[in-house]
Image (cartoon, rainbow, N blue to C red):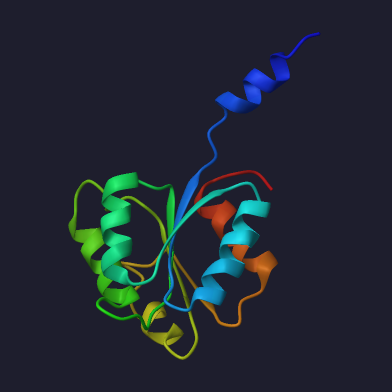
Length: 134
């Protein structure tokens, strides 16, 4: 039996996405959605934990909420942009009322999506930022 396809599959590393979201149910739904789309996911319950995770794991992309304890999504994005080693990582802000703050800061966010978000739009934004063909 030829298992070359299995070796190829194992060698393909899925892009890692860090989620910064303090609402556990939203984080879980987002993680399942991204995993179903073929991504690896690591989640943090606030911006400070997400920043540590980003520095440790060097993900392909970060998706953050705005309002979180200890560090907002804007503060997380600003800290990432100041850090030369992680400043290149794309950041998507997914937020309710604070979407306008994200749009007012295009230098820190690569995309801004409003809550409740549309799954297809979110996955399309992720793919576009990771330059994957759809």
